[in-house]
Length: 488
Image 1 (cartoon, rainbow, N blue to C red):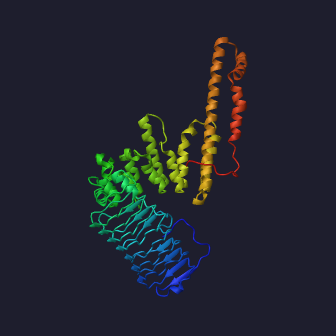
Image 2 (image 1 turned 90 degrees about the vertical axis):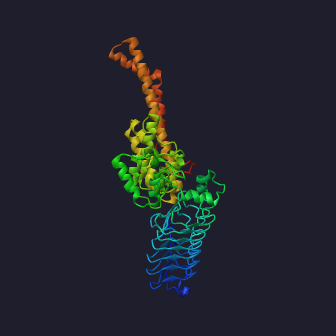
């Protein structure tokens, strides 16, 4: 398991045989657990503030109670396929924990686990937004994933073995948006989804009002009633791909595919929020059901979810271009930007998704490129967009914002220059035509009148003063300036 934070500069590697804790130094950063261990004892490696990585052996079946409690630097735990039970408080307060080497937003628990104990991951995984639970899981203990502030989506299995969701299981997951209760579940504890504000808002329309357990459970159990495609995509049972293939082949679909479920989500929304999305379905969904690309609330559309999770740039581009086409058709105009473009850029920026950020800004100015007469303006803007790759990390966000703001300011200046040039040409042409019609002079005299036209129309003033001044302004600025406020 890993997160984006960096390990300590000094590594201290220790071995642990499951019996003598004194073998493990307090400053340990990496621990290799003995290969013969079947059960990791309670409190085995807790309170190690510098611990970053643990390797557990194949054959290990149980992680004991509070085994890693209060290990705030712990990022990587190599879980064996043999693991069956994670006991109470095992990873409580392991705030940096996740389960993806390249994406700290995902917690993917391996198949084979049957029990997750009370508060096993409570107050941990503060960067995790997506949790995929195994199909073998039977019991989800009390408060097992409580107070995960960033959690957005939980993946479950319709044909899995889950029977119990304990009291307060997801309590305080304020951002939780995408979850359903499979038919195998026989017990849902009280306040299992308490203080999940986004869910409460979807269920009763009031984000910060309490939603009674019965209403929440009824909604999550019947979330996909009559909506086969929504259900198939959420539970990822393979049927969604088959159904979409049949629809694409036959060209026949029903209104159900474009409807919103009990949590106000379309199949495309659900796919973009899935812990392990099948991105191959995106082009088919966009082509067959283009109306689902947009949303009444622009902040809750597939493109936003894709930007926030750092989806492949090809997926984001497919969604964005489909939105632009939908807007163009609706208003009978050329390619138009979605009205919530700024928030899309903000999502990509906060996710440090540089390739997506470059795509969004490039699309933002692609329409201007066709109208700009000077290729060097286009090239200068494209080069500035490419330089965003110089600010890839979370630590670079302030500088990145300044650079994004500079790109927009420069492009606006080029746009004003183009407008002024067009205005000057229009005035000049009008004056020439008026003079030539009145005087009907020779070609030589016409050249003289054109010189007069530049003076009388004011064109000479624009060319000699305004344009050179704006051109001077657009030269690269010194990087030694304080970050300016930016809305992105």
